Image (tube, rainbow, N blue to C red; front, side, top):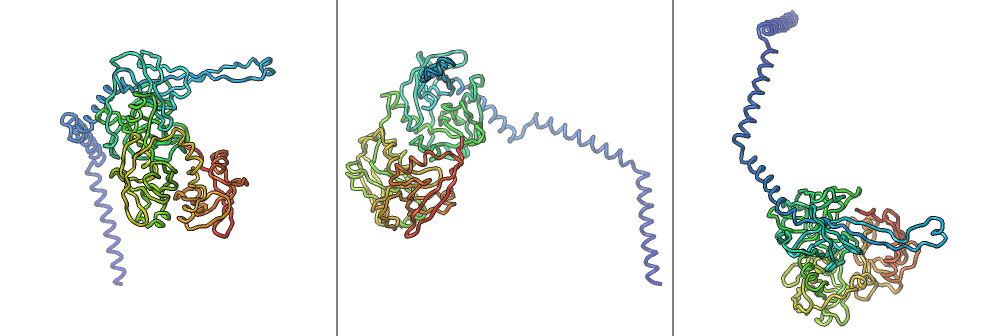
Length: 496
């Protein structure tokens, strides 16, 4: 009986709630209220927008100032960035039989397009070597003006060149200091992407990283790139990368892309590296660089541990050139170069760039690591031989699959605690997360064959590797201790 009464009370309460709700909805125009509220909100929004433009906040004022600052920089810098059109006549030998039927021309004209930056009021222009290399004629355009240009000097090892147009009082850009550049800073890229119809295109971005190296597979010997996400496209090569003071801090050089267009990964040669090359090319038409006389490599975690170093930082001396500056100063195979004149050396690329910046004959102080302790060595630098890049290619090699190899010597075998009395090339380093590392290759392995071809030297190794196309698989036969094994490694596809 009691439960029945409770049920009746609940039913009554629900019914009463419904009645009250109907009364409220009949006496109040809820829809009208909603519309009125929307109208009120809209009025408030319009009022707020008016207030924003009448009395902008500090944040909006800062953004507006930045925008106008970009525009002012562009006005100052754009006149210094030029279009470079190259023309090359290619001679072809056509068999007489084919010539009779098809009349194939024996000369073909190839044209190229790039950018350059005026660095001197007398008409000197800094650009990339690959923009002007092999050109028979060069034409520089600045707006509606066109000038014939001549090559003053080229430096393939840094991919830089200087050309000159006749005249005076040209709008030269102000040179900055790329060493002061910090990751995260705003930069502007100016150049001529794809077509001369798009000359002096301006894009913006930030400095994504500094000191990038190992990107060109040895095509450029001295790599110390600034990485930026400012859009850089084909035709931008040789163009300007400037800071927010309108100073030139880099020469746009290359991109990484699977499509051939910009994906936010572009690279520029820092102006401090370029200035040294540029000044020498203008003064004497060639570049002289300091030279230690050592073959060097990067340290791995394993080799750093073997040398009792806390971390894999510095440049490992794989071989000292007999009669060279380092040999005269008493340096030995297995030394690790930590500093040059107090400047910290990060890796082999860092050492190469640092030494190359000195003039031949300069005395430098090296801090090296030998037998578990630091040692100072004074060296008088020699002059880097012109064919040094080719020489190095015969002695040591690093490649896109992540292997660093050398001809076996007693020193490098002792260092890696292996002992082989047979032919092959010795793996002295494996790049972390590389295709070779994923396949299980190790420092200390002896490569006997590549794609069924016997390997007796680094020169053999290089000649076979160079025939392999990106995306193909390379088969290695490897000796590891007393065991023999095979490793199949796919070569990464090229990044454009």
